[in-house]
Image (cartoon, rainbow, N blue to C red):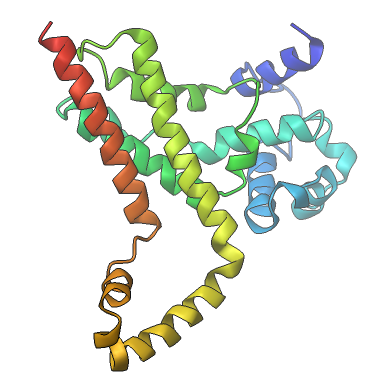
Length: 237
């Protein structure tokens, strides 16, 4: 393992030694990560820099380097802090696998909506932190006792994650045009209220627009339907 990767593993997994003597350190990994999240939430990863994080915290950039070696390590800490612990409902033992995966998928969708920069940060080969691995562990565990093989359970979780990412990416790409689109729909709605009888198909389609949440749930339920068929087949032998 390279020295850079070893340092990143230490930052994410610990231990983080605390001084036994002298004053308490003014900065912490958590404070630094949360400052980075604040900047990335506003301006994306492109607007993130060690200098901006230091300025937000009221310290020099060199002060940050005592805690975090560079931007890559900072982003890894931000991911681990932003995603937090997996959703409790998705781990409820009394629920069935379908209910648990539904709660898990919707919670992940909320994460990407709250922190769009995670789409860019959670890609490629990288060191995962304990919280991020706990999310994967929880989703795979929801499929215990379904008859699916380990690789199939992992593939199912990857499929659900990919669906959430796809919806989140579409929403982010559409964000700049959302205001203009809303105006267009409003104008079109006014026209169809008066002349809708001439365009029944268009009127019906606009009355049942599929928003982001509906698209998320539609794809989610179709994936779970497919898993249900496979699980039923496996259980029947």
